[in-house]
Length: 319
Image 1 (cartoon, rainbow, N blue to C red):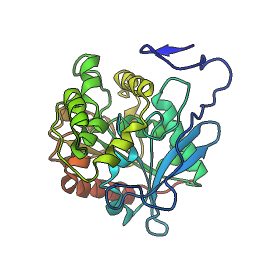
Image 2 (cartoon, one colour):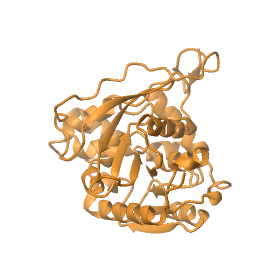
Image 3 (cartoon, one colour):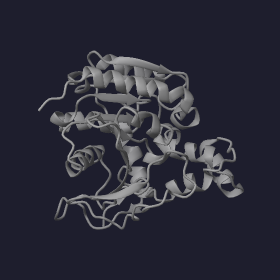
Image 4 (cartoon, rainbow, N blue to C red):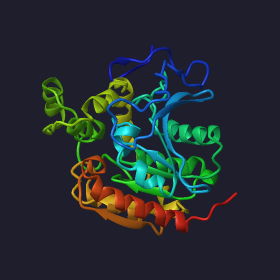
């Protein structure tokens, strides 16, 4: 039995098949909107990726022939929590697809240890399943390295990149514990949306943030209930070992880097270093911290929309 961080993960993943193991992702919500969800959050549906597992996917069709954005959420979050304010505005100009990452929410469950590379391959498998020839990965925090790895491992699929609140490496600012404690995007977003004394006690102690009452609280809490703790711990460790400095300079597609200027999780100077590493990257700035995507969408969403539009205009579809 393999063990990571003291959590049993099941049979040795290197013995036998390379396939992921589906551990019973709950089905999509069906014909009715999800109870308590914010407005304009598209209903999720379960999509099975052959040989990999099943994940929850939220989608906005967008205008006919519009470019496709693949929204990749941050560590401990879900597609719904990270992007709930973005679906409707982005859907005016783009086809928008947002999966739950493996181990997060209702994402793929695997007995194999979490790897960012597997998340990138999940994106490519999802694109194939949905018959998408090209897309623009949009990565937030942990989603940034995954988006960049989609380019590295599946270059013909990538028309451009949008990298938000992320870095070329994550361990330079301090010990592992600092990164692990600071990167709980999903928990901090849920805390801002969830009322209740029990959640207040738990989440305040974990992330030192005060909870406001919100009608979306039960939905936000439900989004996090599917998180797999073993996978989250492994994902945090994967982030601390990620270092793309050598190969990010080879990126040859239009790229936008959105810098969250008051970020205390991923330092703005590290975000700018990412932008200087990628040739020709355009920098967009947001007056907000690491959770600005959810806590101040009026500030974040217009910048995200502008960055996606810039990349889409610059990127030429290729075959």
